[in-house]
Length: 118
Image 1 (tube, rainbow, N blue to C red):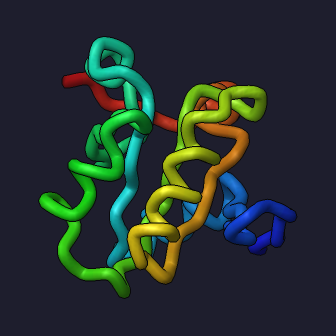
Image 2 (image 1 turned 90 degrees about the vertical axis):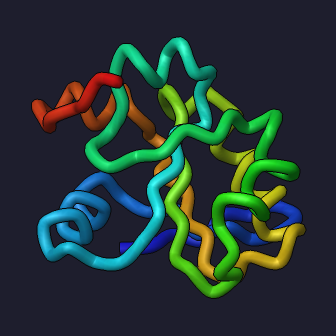
């Protein structure tokens, strides 16, 4: 389900299947695509909002006021570090329920799951 990873903030990872089930159940969470806006517009996971990892410190407090909200961040794929950085920054800002879909958009698409365009 969730896997702890060793880092400064001990961000939990979320699997594709768990994320998909959360979406199917209509769970209350915020999904953040941390990639540049041009890439987000081409394709993103259903329901995702775009907050570029470099802007997370200033944008998140304006867009996500509830520090208890469940937040899932993702980027392109496992080697991409944007979601890791965004997750750590969110925790540093005081968000308590941050999950990292580490495998990212590539894993989602390779599994045949749908994406949206802006």
